[in-house]
Image 1 (cartoon, rainbow, N blue to C red):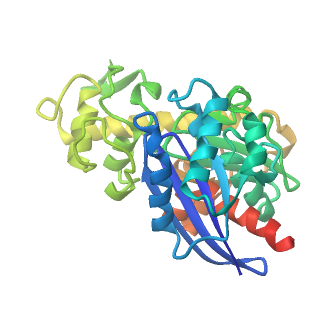
Image 2: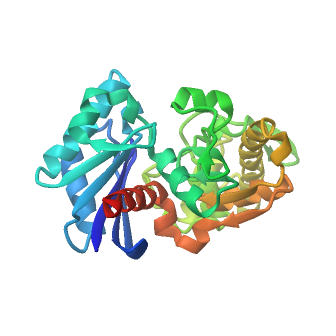
Length: 346
């Protein structure tokens, strides 16, 4: 049996999945995630990695598979600096463990080799998920809605058929949409919301985020609100309504719960349109493959599945099948599987 720990080291969350793998099958999967805003105290990353491993792994893994997105943080002057920092933090946290990083070419190499060409290892978490899903669903559209972004990845004949590989290329191709289930600034989703029968422009202050909308609507539980709230108050429906009211420079004495909930429903509809626009852009390049099924994953898998249905596409909520913790840490689970397969094959 091989034990692997897969990592997704992000700018706001550190996630890991521990996998016990034998004869082509996963015997056990355990996932863990902790909020960690790397720009606040990046030098604590090695300690955070150790804490997440202690939570995810019932025993030390034989090897680690590393993916990341933290390199984009403005804590670093360049992505090159960020990738090197993450790689060095893994080495500092686990000096005795064999670790591999996944490249944008889909290959695992040692961290020492990765340090020699760091830009090949920037923002690889989406690719791990796509390569793994392609083994089960050789023709599909993978839509992974995380806390911050949405990945829309075509998989054709068992191959990842994305037009872009870097974040910039994927943004331009519609394959990376900056909207997510938790952390999205609401002014990035809507410019106005309905209030008292009229559309009211929204403020661009950091009063509320998408997690407040989905908490109010019951799409997320308080325990799923895995990031700091904008006002420091708890992730409850009552507090979320207070935050959302401030989006239109009001409060819960000025707006009723029903009026605030109507705002939340409107924002949800507009977020579905954002994801739908990305899906439509990707599908426009696949005119002869309109029969592709959407595979929904991530903490916002519910957004992916509903966006697909509204475009008349079949959807499989793989997030529901995997369970919420594993779905939210999909790149970690995928990276661990991929490395286990490679190591077992010898």
